[in-house]
Image (cartoon, rainbow, N blue to C red; front, side, top):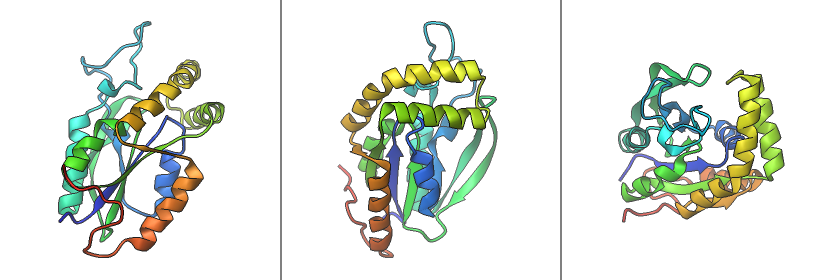
Length: 210
């Protein structure tokens, strides 16, 4: 039996995934730290030549899945420190469970690892957090400008592109096995999991390996 089970939290960029994870009080695995570096020749491109950072191929799905499974089974794993502003890996750190029986893994590419987590027998639940498109777009732009993630013009263009893509992003996540859920409903469900989690026993709604 794994030491912990993973709650996968996905959703369009700016949907509130990170906020939900941060407020959980649980160990959090930032899946965005598994982005490829800017000089990686395998990066997907937009028609204008810019890197498409919202395409699954801009991300190391195999490494992210391995980190999730290792953390759940052994209680610790090593993850990269990724700097979004420079699109580069700037270091690494160790993440430990610290006695918890649930770990939150959040990122926009969760759809790529839902099946693998289920097959490994470590999946507690998988969510697609979303809210109205315009709200998501505004909150995402404000966040990215505040954190100086990229140039303002790039962020504006990306925001418009993501708003157009958002319905397809949600459909892909749901098709991969994520439950669509609003941020407030997700917070309530997370509190129920925290109350219910028993030590050394099977957690509620945990999906068995196929």
